[in-house]
Image (cartoon, rainbow, N blue to C red; front, side, top):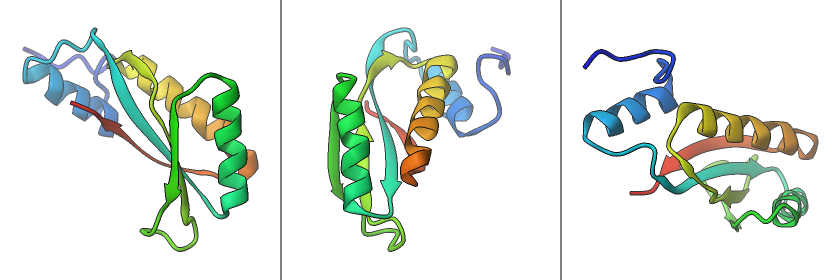
Length: 112
């Protein structure tokens, strides 16, 4: 099968989705996908977590030892189809809404 770069662009998300699709994964099935944002202080992370909770988002909050400048992590767990449009759109929403709180997007993780 030839890769459609409009559905599977050449970036981390597009490459991961392409590999999943090639392995036989039905990307149209909704699944929980993890999106992590890290913060420079506990207070800012908790403010962002409150914003997500007010929007009915499932999340976790924990220390993040891998980056001493951003030692707090909020991970959101939305259910969505594994499409580039859905994932990149949610990532953009998190980046935009966490920016005033000095949040730094740290990645998307696909739960199997």
